[in-house]
Length: 274
Image 1 (cartoon, one colour):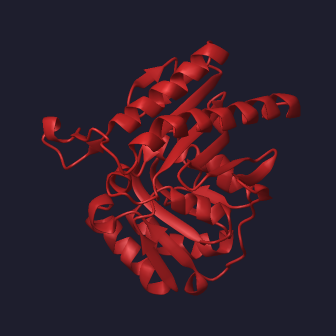
Image 2 (tube, one colour):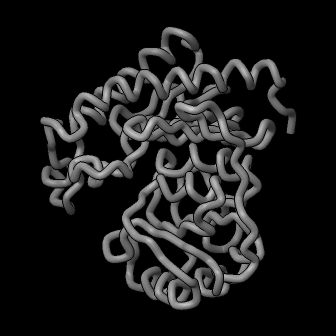
């Protein structure tokens, strides 16, 4: 498959950093403030599904910049749906991943911005503006952390054995069905340590070599596409629960810094793969 030229990739990378700045400017005044909470799930008779003014304002700000700079690009966003989803370039947005953390005042929420080129994720970022962090990466150019002190290259850490691994998931009770929960429990029993409730910030920690694996299910495209180039650019691997590449619609996802560790986890996860 042809690759983006280095100049084109650098241009889009710089624009992605600007999108993170616009998103943070929209979100931060509402963090730990009156954020206008609504429940999207209530109208559908579903479980609590929070959304805030910050979610909507951040996605609107990102979309405005994309429309101004790249009017031919498509956009897929959690709050405002699809616009030209089959364009050559498509931005995939989750303005606040971890809204439950956001409304609880916990700085574990992130802004996820991914870019598809000809249907495949090629560039992505996980931003945490309250902490002043943007994790950004691509397979072609590698991954790095942008922070107040400058930039730091990102690299996953070796962890070939699941028994040595630090793993994470968001909420096994809410996010997994019975069979999936059983698979998670089996992997958790083998791992050294598990952390819950980190949402997409855990993806960034895999890329940074601080965590070894994240296991999730029921994901949408905007929950995962930004993380794929970031983790792969840092030397990690992203797969579904069968070990195959993750499709455009998300679903069951496992990402790891070490392929050998992922393969051990797949022994349990494959039994509940969909």
